[in-house]
Length: 559
Image (cartoon, rainbow, N blue to C red; front, top):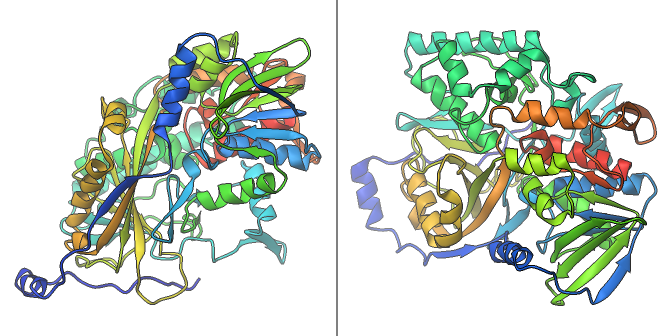
């Protein structure tokens, strides 16, 4: 695969930098703004539900299926209906664009992610996702083997870490660490291997469930404790190893090793490519990642396009009430464009809403929904997009990469940044957008901070974190846009996997088998009632594209 990167410029010595700074023009006026998610709209929905009786609907509409929620799961449900030949459906979405936490945006004309920014090349446990990629032309059979379009695979270099005042390749701290640290890396690698042999880990995770008992006994033991306690049992206390594992957990789950379960901490590695200590053999293709300047927003845009063309997508629409009746389902929704409440009637409904929202709007909620809303916990996130008028100066070491992480980030939950220009094929340096992530599941008052602090507060914090590896960031930044997620993702805290695994087993065995594109059957344990099928990554206990898409696909087929 050809490698195209921005031209690298090493950081100048302090004296030369000071001299050069005197010749620099003044920094551009810096603008700060919120983008992507309308928190006020969501809070207005909450307040309206708390006031008592809802306003009477002014309009009644009908369809064969209603999909409540336009995140990845809702879009997947719509696609599965389309593939099954069902076109009389409507998808209701709160925001003005669908996509959930996989939305895309642009700053000064440069496309960038507003949330999730990559998709690992899916394995055979995710055939629904594989089929989607084939439909989108991202993979095809060549001489009997599947090949992925290299334009969409992450270009090299993929990852780097700012550690000890210079950049190193990869995200595991290795440069200058002692033999004791390297030995703990090797021991953790062995522990991950042992966990894989004890009981399989898959993504989506339901593929590893036992049809009768749910979570395997080995996984039940891991699910019962926090990851930090498991590491302590294993004698894995090295600070560098723990920093890396904490980063990985915050990256996937929104919270660190002191909060997520040991099952989740091991699942991060065991369901993908394992963990390999420095010097260990690594499969050549183990790091395959699909990404785009828009992040996973590119995928949700492709999923939404046919819905827009057919008039099946209703954006700016807040679901207020979902009720099962003798004849079907009634869905009352507030249309933010008209200011009216509209009633939708259909034989079936896919509830692709976060669990805590579904529990509020579903009338007489089933026990499993009410219990899930009480058990699950959610992590807030802040995503800050920084437009730069030119590439940044750089500290010595590894070349600029797609994913750039700062060891000991100055911000709570800081996860570093991705470069929106990394995938472009034009080698000439130019303006770009850096997307800086903060996973705030470990910050006690993060949700309140997101609601009350201005965009400049979050933007300045991101710029301060980047100033260490990039001292000229304020000279280059022109506009900063912040996207806030009050409940970005479910955190897989201890006990969640055991609880959720039992919900899918409540359906009669004959109801668990669903056809995939009319060809093969497999068990898809979809939480459901007589007329409602529930689909969201929350039902997997953590939020990744594979989980949300597969559950949405299954719920669409059930509907």
